[in-house]
Length: 142
Image (cartoon, rainbow, N blue to C red):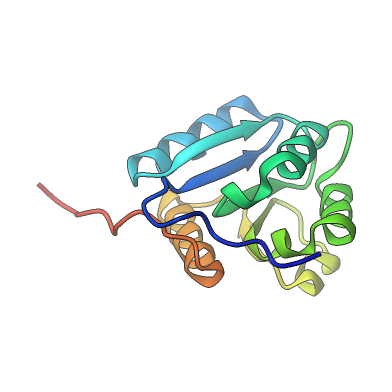
């Protein structure tokens, strides 16, 4: 498997939010969209796996909750590790629980509860690290 290339210059930045809580998906969607991200959602691990298998390279960042129905966040991580390891660097693991294996993955983390500024910052950091063009830094004030 070769590394996934970032989208072509000028392509809209897209984030994938994988969480079974509709309210949390909405909050993340709004926060990221406000900063210029396109946002897609998956309510469970199996739906996310399908999206990532079909077109994982389109996502600059993937917010992955661990407590998912069907296929857990950890199981999804393990599938990606085996099938599409280049996608792992795009993951942000979102969790309210402290799990030792999460630290061992080296993935970016977003502990619950989180501040929306942290969501925006981690999305930009992951995008920059993977060569994905994040939206321009939003203007504050006015």
